[in-house]
Length: 320
Image 1: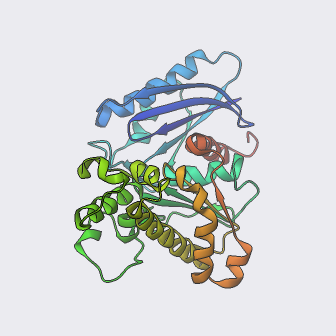
Image 2: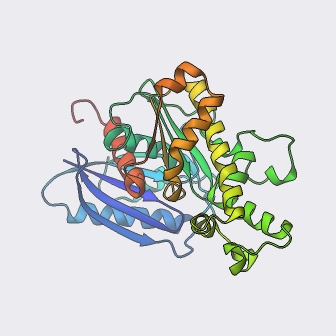
Image 3: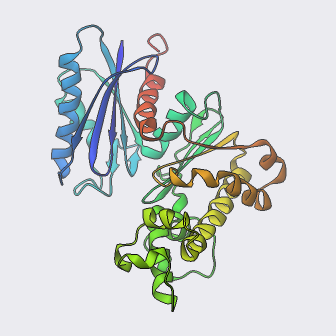
């Protein structure tokens, strides 16, 4: 018996065939290359059918799909900001009507939900019934597992932590993506560095060696190795906000673990002890002493494993 996992990302689709144990048997990757709407859905169908056709040894019982954005659980539609035409897209219906294997169980969840399911199944949060995955990349989101259940909220938008209000007063800078994301996402770190570069007269540090408009978070992390003052300032602020935000999450939800992942963690994993120390100043003290802060153990495979675990959780108990 086998499960297909699909991870729809910003630029590509990764698909893999897994045993029930979580062992990956085969993997394929397709670039989106600007594909839109129905075409992206067809690419997912084609990947599923490829695995169905190739698999000779075991039956394929389900497919779990991870998408960036929002999965509307009541309607079975999705919103993915990186795919034109996917504002309220009937992805589940398209797959069910076009895949070659009838009655295939199809489950779809947001990337942040899949991240925490992957980590609690095979990663840094194994054995936890209460854990939060903070995904810090281009944006910031959180997958939240409470008492063994994924929470969704009234309209499936739980975990939009990039909108946490952490620095008053409100400014127009927060309009696009929220306060927390403005300062502490990968995009925000690059933006804050560019702003300081424009405002700092006489600066001649590492970041001055590149045109301001080309500075990214990668450059900021690299400049930190040379103790560049702007890199230090930008990342100190990010550490402060990662600490404040996770302190709020710990105080609200009392998790066993906070898992840091996404492209920024990565290079920011070294800061986790500092982030925890910052959080201890703000969070509920008993909860803060009991929670553990960890870096993701799965990174790029968290979404695929989470999608597979999602499908396994949805199978009838006699099969799972």
